Length: 59
Image (cartoon, rainbow, N blue to C red; front, side):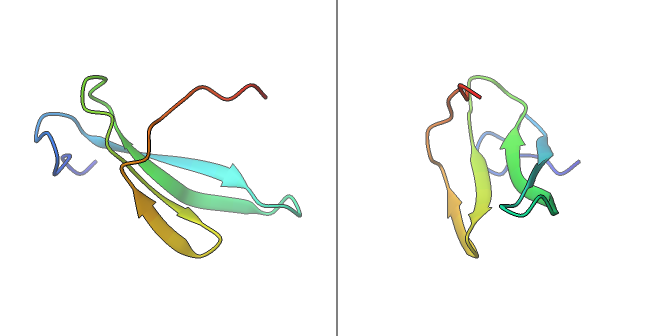
């Protein structure tokens, strides 16, 4: 996996999800494995965003 460009210590791990119709979305997000870093980059409705605070889902 690629090294995190923010901290240079952690690796970026890919995350997948499912769309509204149940279709798989491979590599929807990448997150740094270093807990103290928290860097993330994701795709939402075709737009790329990064650096948003991470939280735990209630689902």
